Length: 94
Image (spheres, rainbow, N blue to C red):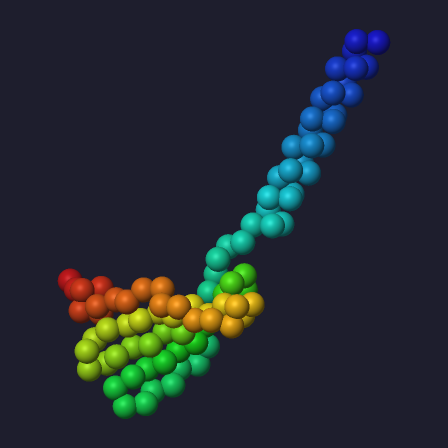
């Protein structure tokens, strides 16, 4: 009787571990962002990108000032906020 109980506990534990690992891998968001086409007007380059989980990103490059700003849009709130601003000279310095 004890041997059957131990086998049952081992089988159930292995099944639980397999199901837990499958749930983690299926729901794991890689956070990949994909860029689309760019538009250039004067001293600005604008590129939009999408992230499957949160919304869209808008990258604005000011060529004259050598600055890039990244904005995030939230589809559910219909809002946009700045995520980061980067000095391109510092980012690509030797």
